[in-house]
Length: 262
Image (cartoon, rainbow, N blue to C red; front, side, top):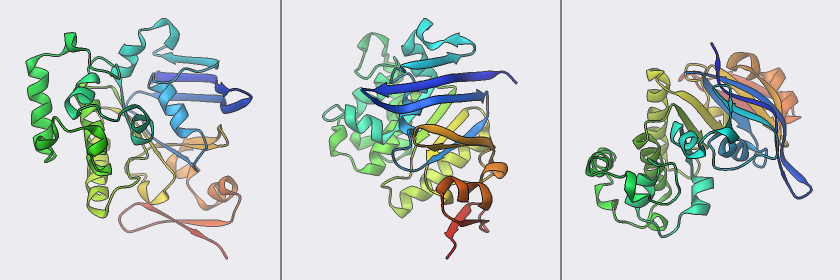
C-alpha cells in the first residue's frame, strides 16, 4: 500500500538546537501507529509538523507524494485530526468552545465565519450532547477541565471529517473515568479502520497490539527504531531504548506492562 505521509531527513532546528533531526518515516493509509518516547523526545513537535501546525527546517515532508509546501496547508490541517492539549493549550485561552471547535472546519486557529453554516452549528451541538457538554457551547476554553478540553479537541477534529486521527498523549491529566472513556474512544477508532491513526504516549499501559500495528520509538529528537508493534515492544528492544533492564509483559486485558529489573 502506498504511503499517505512520507518524511525524509525531516528536521526542526530552533537556534542552535535541533528539536528533531533526520526523521525518516512512511505512514501507510489506514495504518495504526503508536509513537512512544519520554518527555522532550520530540513527539509533539513531529506530530504538529505532520498536522501542518509547525514548519520544518530540514528534509522533505509529503502528503500522497506532494510536498507539504506546495499544498494548501489549511487543507492538510483539515485532513489531519490533531488532538493535542499540550499544543492547543498554548494557543487557546478565552476563545469559546463554539469558535475553536468550528475553526477546525477551515483548518485555522481562529473562526473563519465564511465557511460556517447553520448545519455545522447543529452538528456541533449534537456532538456536544453526546459527550454531555451541551452547556459548554459558549464557555471559555480556559474554564474547562482537562477532560472537557480533551473532548472539545476531539469534536473539533471530528467535525472536519479527517483522514488521519492524531492523538497526542490523550490520557495525560485525565481521571480514572475519563481514561476509561478515552480508551473506549481509541478502541472505536482502531476497530472502525476508517482512519489512519497516530497515537503518542510514553505509557506502555496504553498500548496493545490489538489496537496498533506499528510502533515508532523516539529519543532525543530522533527515531530510535520503528516496525511492527510486537517486534518493537519487547523486553530486549525497550531495555536498549530506555538504557535500563526492563521486562515487558502483556496483561489479561491485552495491554502491555513494563517493570524494571532489580
